[in-house]
Length: 428
Image (cartoon, rainbow, N blue to C red):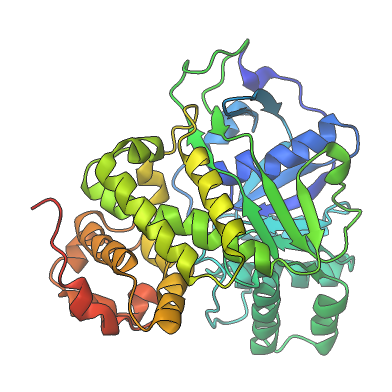
């Protein structure tokens, strides 16, 4: 039997999800499935796709797939049947807006990368879908306000600071730009609950067909580590009974302390390590830890990251040790090429704050993190970022020009040009 033939329970769409990549499938969609399986929830997910490149590969499997979670002590293989379908926002704009009218939809969740939550002024979209995620969300919420009126729980999972507050501010700015009535802005501010969040799980993604032994066929097996954590700011919301399904969720007064340690150490380790590893031809995170050169670079980066933080040092070191153990998980094949996507955007959010705060504390720059910035520039010139940055457009630029390019990094980094220029391309 193929997993596409697996029976899918008829459940109302309760979640509208922006982004349908392997992380969301291995994190939030898995959580929805866990709640359904525990009989504490009865809902399904519809995915909003953008920048479509052909057919949605999940469609061929009736939106069913297997989520495999492994570490040295656990192995779990769960068939996920909680996704009802998907909509291509740009190509099916009216169908996308109609999602707002679904009577039982009550949660909006997103993972559009760090670059996804951005403000881009645009005209009111009448028959054409806006490009940015906040503008899409504003259009969707306006249809909701007009046709339904029930508020939504909105959980952005993007790794930017104050992600919920920022997203709400951009929605309100678009509403003002478009001249929408004050009643809509009031509804967004009072009926809709935008939450700041933090996510933590390594999702390594798809594996070759047949690599995982299952009692059925599945061409879209998704893999990840067993560990997971979702931190949500504010009181627990009954629309997502995550705790009742033994999901590791924390409803807290502030995500800030959790975010600082996780983003700077785990994500910062990834982002400071991967360009160098890619230049040296290292293909997976586990192989990075097995490569003496890359592993030494990573450990030096972690020392500088920890030194930059204004948190309990023992707690930070314990988390860093845990991260190294998670990176070494023999069951996780986390490809460096996948992590390298959008590297410039990630560097600004995940690594640059450590460089800045290290300088403020010690009056000098952290050498290894600046080295990682140099390796990032070499990598971008060689490979691009997997999306809009093409290597051929960067190769003619000097180090100083790239660092001063605010379109590339969102800020001017030319103050590091002299130090970055000291480091040679490791490929020779």
